[in-house]
Length: 111
Ligand SMILES: [Cu+2]
Picture 1 (cartoon, rainbow, N blue to C red):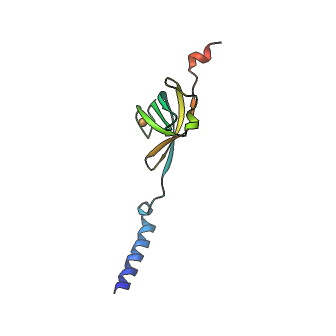
Picture 2 (picture 1 turned 45 degrees about the vertical axis):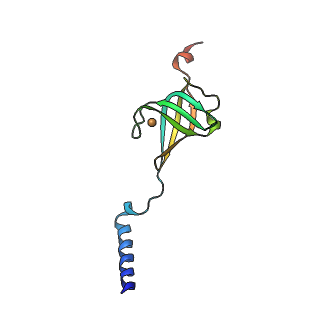
Picture 3 (picture 1 turned 180 degrees about the vertical axis):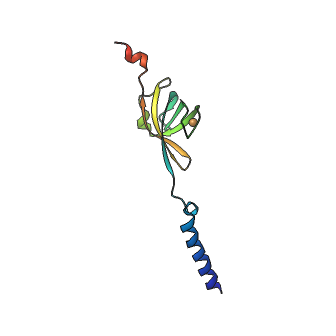
């Protein structure tokens, strides 16, 4: 009887996974978002950067928040810099995977 139950459960589980693929154990979902903002604080030792970022469609409203980042990526950045960056979100845990300083239009237009 136990063996029969095992078979029954096993076959139901197999059936379910075919019919409802979204109920199988999910691999970690990794999403990437392009964003822009202004640096508020840099803590290179801790690998943290605080950015007042613009709205990121489909992800977050505009806000000031701290991100985890490879310290080497934020060398040379300081508070007040305009930056564009890429956030990688892995199952809700966000970190910056690339970041660069943006030249302001005013500065660019100065000869
Ligand atoms: Cu945010």
